[in-house]
Length: 242
Image (cartoon, rainbow, N blue to C red; front, side, top):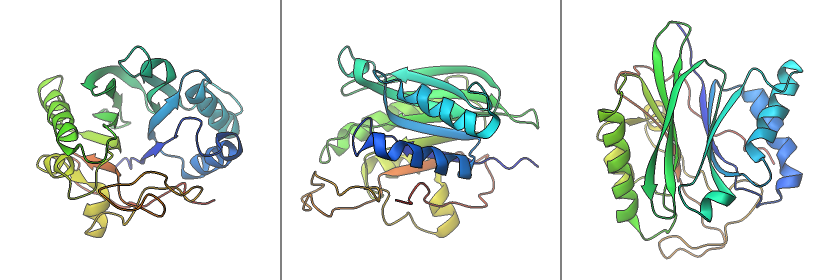
C-alpha cells in the first residue's frame, strides 16, 4: 500500500519578511517531505515558485531539477496575474494538468493528475478563494464551480483539494465542500484546527467578521479528500516553527 503525504501552504507572496523566512520554509518542507504540495500566493516577478523548488531539490538530491517538479499558473487577470498565482510541487509523475477560472480578481484552481506507484491516478487540486471576509456568497459560488468541474471533467475516483479557502469551518463554502468531500483534519481529529492563520511570524492586520484585526486567528486552510480516499493516518499543522 502506498502512503501519500500532501500539504498546503500560503507563501504570502513577498509579505511577512520573505527574505528572512524563506530558508526556514525550505528546511521545514524538506523535513516534512510531502509527495504533493499546494502553494498559494506565489510571486511570479521574483520567481518564488522556481526558487522554492530549486532550493528544496538541491537540499534533497543536490540537483535543482529533482525530485520535485513545479506546475504553476498565474491568476486569470491582467494585473493580478502579473503579480501572483498558485502552484503545485509534486514528486509523482504528472499525466496531465488543467486549470479553472473562478473569477473575483482572477482566482483559479489548478489540477494536476499524478500516477501512484500502484498505477492508480490521483487528482491533486490547488486553489485560493476570494479573500473579502464578509463575501461568503462569492466563495460559495467558487466552490460550486470547482466541485462541478471536478465531478464532470475527466473525473477520477481519488481526488484531493488543498488550499486557502479564506473561509471559517461554518462558512457556506466549507459546508458545501463537505457535501461531497471530507476534511482530512476533521476525519482524523473530529474537528477542524483552531487556527491556520496567522503564521507564527506575524499578527494579522485585517478584521474578519467584525473581530478586531490585531490578534484575530482562525481556520482558513483545508485539505479535502473524495470518498474513494478511505483512510487518513495523520493530519497536522506544519511549517509552524518560527
